[in-house]
Length: 261
Image (cartoon, rainbow, N blue to C red):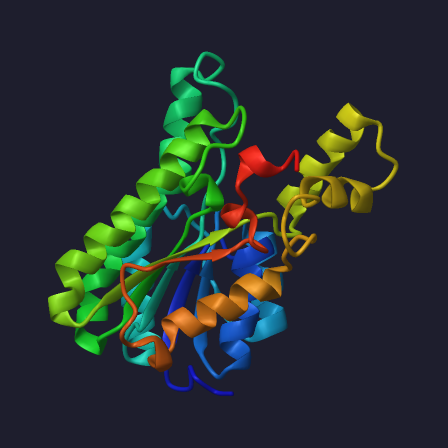
């Protein structure tokens, strides 16, 4: 399939994990991709692998994101998709979350999406493009000891709906994906912590434990999320906006009080 031939996307947080997988999928389908992230080396590696363009910078910096939109217009004639994938921080209970930790969570999850979408929207209106927010099932329910992360991902879903409502009349769509556990470098680190807590021997055992009550009994791969992203950003999803798509193996459909049965 070449759903993105002649289309251009900017992807934030594109150096690893889901962001890198989306870059790979979009370029494989003929798209032009501009990758950004705070660390140059990872995004340059993804760019070399995919044929994309790497521009290091902080996605929460409005000036940086505006420069990327200008670059998309100069190099490729316009912008069709803004993928707001940057995120992280915000772990610990509220009493363990200091003001600096809270600010970091806001900046990493919400301010990056705000700055990216705000910079992109005039260009997206011109091309009838769309915004994709990478939220989380933490935006639908609360995991333990992740007060900042949970709060910001809930906020990201609100931002998705607000953009969809306000810019739909101008032809711009905005949707969000809520992944569950996905095999990424960050998730592998969390599995390492779980291995220590539970005395598990391998990462595979840790992933099996965190997905034992998930209907599909396994974590997603980055490519699974990228496939959902490609669909939502493509023409066949032209009547889908303000939607929240879970890519979680069914985790959020489970009735927790019945697990004992």
